[in-house]
Image 1 (cartoon, rainbow, N blue to C red):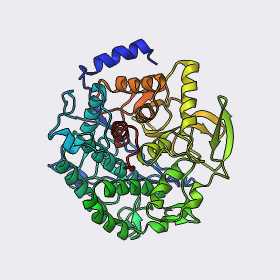
Image 2: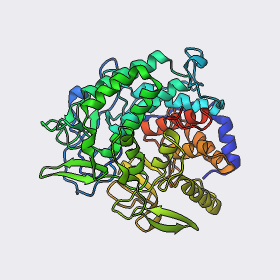
Image 3: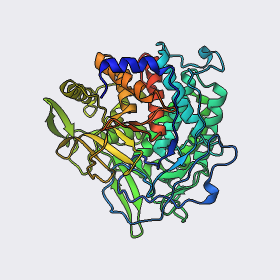
Image 4: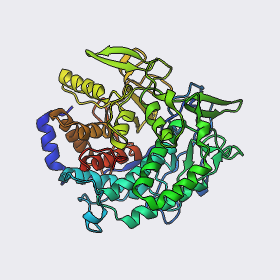
Length: 484
């Protein structure tokens, strides 16, 4: 890990670095479910991007293979083949250029000016959106070079599009063209058994992808957690762009969201070759964050917010709540998303302050910056959960199935930067500086750092989106996006 003097030097050089290596088309690993038996779709030649697409892509696919069914939690869609190279045009390193006066475009609540380095991060994230946005559907690829996305990824795409306008680097016409196309696609999606969106869709065709995508079921189930995140962002769009509210209502009326609620908590489905499973979905942090989207739809999910069944552990002299159920992934992600997007009101389940303290204590102990989150990987197993605590072990990284990972990622750029805008301290600014340093030689914001210090170059929508929305949050004087 770099010391402070090295970080300062890196920041100073950030504005002039524009060295670009080959970019790679990494397999998608997306969010939120449980019985993880998802198989990558066998790709068809017609899925290649149309001529109007702004970037060439490599479509990844594989033969179907049997996987072990586990309990519902979160989901990663993982390719079974080695990624291929994809050539991306080299973009010049510049600060964002305003096509219209920023004051006409920016969020009315914006009060805080951003630094030059933060604006360069915006420029990098904007490149990801521009390169991976699909004109045919309005959807954005979840991972660069992988034309698939879950509802969680689609929510991240909406968030990024909204943030670019609010930050004054994309005009209203571009924003509404992209949102209009995306909302139209959402309304036209073939639904799983006519009820709710399938776990993932092809971002070029808008058709279901994964197992059973070519059958009458239109896929293999839905993720209650993914849908919860999407509904949060649909609510934000309806609030900030009222003229789009009617289009959003048409989507809500078509989707039967109440079917994902059972016993006042969230339930997802998983279709296999033998049975369809309907199981509780979500663990501490993820469950409450996603359930917020259901509350915005006036659905009763009160049991999702109860804390009476949580256990407690002491980690580095800090008392922490944990979920005693299976696959209790505990990362920074849901707590950061809730704080930045919805509210920073205290609650029995939201322990972001303690998680921040744990990270700072870890840094004070070994002088190594860390940020534990879920992230895509540029190598097998393509996705991981960097858990602060997991089934009796602290700082423990596992795959989507709970298998321990040896050489894992220890620093998530999106999580570290989100912490840096929520908290104001010397430590939090060190996190921001590290993200800037990590991104200096990349045209888009990379995912993070592996434990050995090498860069994780699985460029993805969730990383670039959260950093954009974090800057939007900061510019609003640290007020949640959903708030007026």
